[in-house]
Length: 528
Image (cartoon, rainbow, N blue to C red):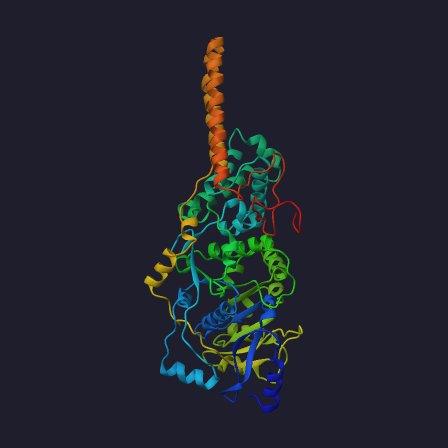
């Protein structure tokens, strides 16, 4: 399917000056051509990409091979391990006759090796260092996605966050958010609710029931402290290789909106924290987002706009994002248009809908002499149609490619290996123990208790005024209680240096693309 002229065009189109990730070699008439390598320039990795294909066609192995090469070149990698297969990166691969024959045919100098890997889990649900986010940092747009709110309810939730920001009610966990909404819907909070204007008591009640539902489903453990510092995924190992951060999600396949939204929180937080670097010789981080269709299914307009903006702007921070899914149709057009690097594995065309998806996929590739509809339905496992952005900014020729095999274990790592890595992790002591700081829940509980106490005392006070000694004793007790409360606040602040979200009274905290925010961010900059 590729003549000599086409092979020469491919060979010339994939010659790059700088470092590259070797994807595989070109194919001709069903045979690999080791002298015609197909690569992806490291300097173009932050132009983002798409790895697509039907189930069982080799997408995961392509992702694994790319992650290995990036790590070997000192680039940190973050990947979502939805099925548990990618934990094998932590163990060396084992050769066999089939693998040896394939490697020799494509000219791959295959050597089984392991790579520095850090395992994470959302809220400690599974093996790995727990990743949590505070409700405040997560923000109203992302939280609305997890709660499955409609656009009206999402706007109302933004007003709740606005109120909490204005009144120094720190939202660390779901209990804090629930306490704020319960206050706004109570008799004591009706004036505050009226001041918010666009938030009705009925809508606030719906949001409150959604929160209670999340807590009933056990999702409260994903929100809270200590909040994960996203800078942790930018680390390199002592030998200079990039650390591969693998977020285990196999325990959360029944909660797709939760884990896909958490991944966007990680990206949004990185965007807010990383400095501008412009074009770089190699990326600061490459982020692989598996099962990408879960991110977009049923998403609100505000959420999709925020995803699009994040993808568009984060490349200037030196971060590359690769979406992994079945067809390009799974990704919205505004996002797809920003994915310059394409690795398309085989597709199936068993139904009219499949045929429609096939035609749409073909239309996303540059013109070539291949019959892409035929090629994409006949390509073998571990083969793909590739086009990348060259180091001159132009698309490379379309190349039918036999992909390189990963050198790490092409199956899940053993439980003992994962346990050992987690136990020896420097991050485990930092994030394993849950912290419950003084925040909105405690503040509003104390306020409610104080109001109840005042109501109880009113009848007695009406009958008898306290003596001078009694009043002095009460004043001293109140002062002691206030001082104790202030000590608690200071202790919490010292434990949470750099992450306390308390702001000056009356000033709303700065929020980013998704309405997400950390207390340590300074006002100013792109979103200030």
